[in-house]
Structure formats: structure tokens, C-alpha cells
Length: 121
Image (cartoon, rainbow, N blue to C red; front, side, top):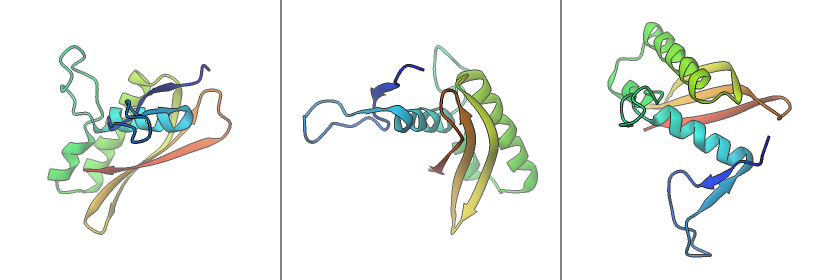
């Protein structure tokens, strides 16, 4: 796989260079996943089905049924918009009044299972 490189997410200015901050490799890949999951479905005008929609969980009563629906949506989103990964485990974790999304996945050309934890805000 070509080395992944691009604008940092969230978008910011690099304090050392004064230019746009850039990330690469596995960190950039995790940022791309975070962006995908936190985007609301329908938010992108040209690609209405893009997004994981997990921010909508913040305003819901979390129960087992809702967590299953969220897992299904996130898995579907990963398979559709990020073909370089194969989801292994998706968890919604309520902790001290906050919600976290933990995703375990296998990434193409990277040995082992990777994990990213994303605060849902």
C-alpha cells in the first residue's frame, strides 16, 4: 500500500511551519476513520450516504438494541467507504457520562489487529 499522507483531522495549522498540518501512515488512517464515523449521514452534498452517524447517539437513550443498530451502521459504512479494512469488533462504550466508539480492524498491508478509540462528541 502506498504511504497514506494528507491534511490532519481536525484541520489545523502546524505551529512550527505555519502551514497546514499533515499526518501520515497509520495515524492518518485513524484520522480518516474518525472523520468517516463522526460525519452525519447525509452531511456531504455530493455523497449523501457517506458517514457513520455515531454523533446521533449522543441524544438517544443507549440500550442494547440501539447499540446493535449503531454497530451494523458502522460496519456497513466501513465496508462501503474504507475498502482497506476488515472490521473485527465494534463497541459503543458509555463511560462517566461520555460515549466512546472502539473499533478493532484488520488493515491491508499491516500485520495484526489495529484498534482505534474515538470519543463521540
